[in-house]
Length: 387
Image (cartoon, rainbow, N blue to C red; front, top):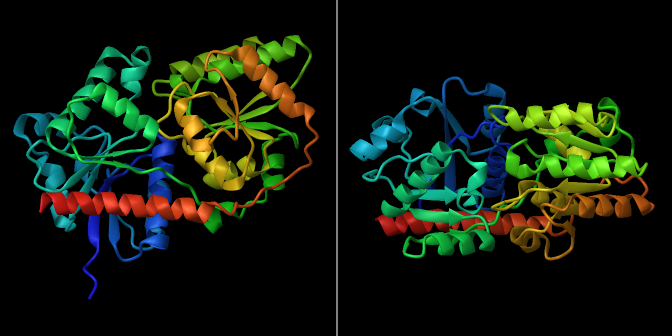
């Protein structure tokens, strides 16, 4: 007789704040249902004000439950209670009411005396590698949270070997249980129903375009793309980069980028589409000339992983983790090398490439199955270690 499934509590990640985190959970839940059915039951805890349409994306996945509680509002002061009292009692009560067995802790700390088995996800250690991109308050808050999770004996999930190397470098004395769980993406069939030609026409794009679907955080490095396009414009070379994703909060970087687009006369080349539906993201990704990802830092790039799923050519920054993800199969440029990126774009444009709405590739199933396997095993190991 099979044991009952472990009920795993997750905190909702709003898409407009962190599209990569939102997609991580969506792909994870679909992968668990597809490849490890009956083993884990995800329970997603959201605030009362969270977007119902976003939450419906999760509740439509079989075996996933969505629960709204005041304790999971963004302004809830659970961290202070967790640090002082050792337990976020409001969150614990919510988990208890839904019979949660294991908690997946990300961007939140539930307390050093929290009684449930807890797996902490460290998506990356960017605040240690690129501290200048964080305010002092943000950097200290993030570091305090990570160190509290380590000191509390959490099992840790990392997203790549690159992240594991950073972890060992910055926390050499930590002895926590570690699992490396590499995200993989297989969009559900409903997200692939949009006709790429129709979506291209909807946004007024030419048939040949590059695609940059990153949110406007500083480390995503839109500035480099703008600088490269400025160099190309001076050479009389016009390329179109379609850009989607939400602004940073507050929107200082986004406002600066869009102001420069106007000042440099690049509105026809740097096409900002806004925060568009996921089905449109996949349609544009499938048909683009190449994915562009100029990021200065990644724990494991969601956009790169999604491009891999469709066999989309990639022009990406030369990061250790990007090399790990692509195995050397992409075109790379330095994170500060605008002329190098400009040359990569010109080289891609020079190749004759007929329109192609790509389909999911043959490697997808194996990668997504391993993602589900590794995550399920990490949760089970934490449950056993706590028993």
